[in-house]
Image (cartoon, rainbow, N blue to C red):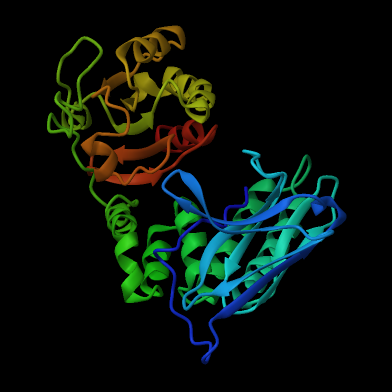
Length: 360
């Protein structure tokens, strides 16, 4: 679950460390004997080595200078080996940093020393304590909420520095739109450009919270064909379904046949639809499938008897941006009498319970 660290040299924030820009990274373990230590940063999809040293006995020292902190990996492996044998995530900053072995069944290491590394370790300890409570018989939903609350607190407590930016970049989907906007506001101006799309998405997400009018899904799309084509190739807008006098409530359901979590929701949707469709409940399924065959196969095999549309263009569709959908499944319940969204992200039995409440 934990996603804190990410390589981000470009977003590195300048720090005031007096006149010192020097850092050292030291490690010592009998597991390192005869190997090489590498300091690596991510460049595109590859790791680029910016320094390396042979392990002397059981120990190594990497040293250099940096005016701005950046995130990297210290990798220990045999010379020429493709895969790291041991590694540690590290914020390289003007400080004395030590790579220390952590207790556990599998060998693992962490970076200690420097404000950023120490802050990351403190947050990791909090998250690990919450994760340890999860499991069968636990209130996992409450613990998950506590987990992400701790993550968000970590963002705000770190004042927009590179650690804060990395936490946000890797976990923004778990936070409320206004939380994302508030967190971005703490980031220094020179680094905010890399968060422009995230901010835009969060601002759009505010427009589709409960209480706001639904946004129509029309022929207009980002690909070559309309985004609201039915399986038989006809255009079917969301507006036409919402305004159909037979319908009282329409669930806009973003999904895909390749999406495991989406398919796990299917039995709940099928049950709710069978029970409440005749009373005015409709589902407008918007698929993010990449090809027609698996989309149509899922509809047939899973007996998804509701309305379906798709541009068959994966994530490249306008509706995804209009509804600020960053992960699927995602859904929005519309009250047809008002044209407003009244609930979002209903999971499992929540759909059926909501229909029971509304269509007594």
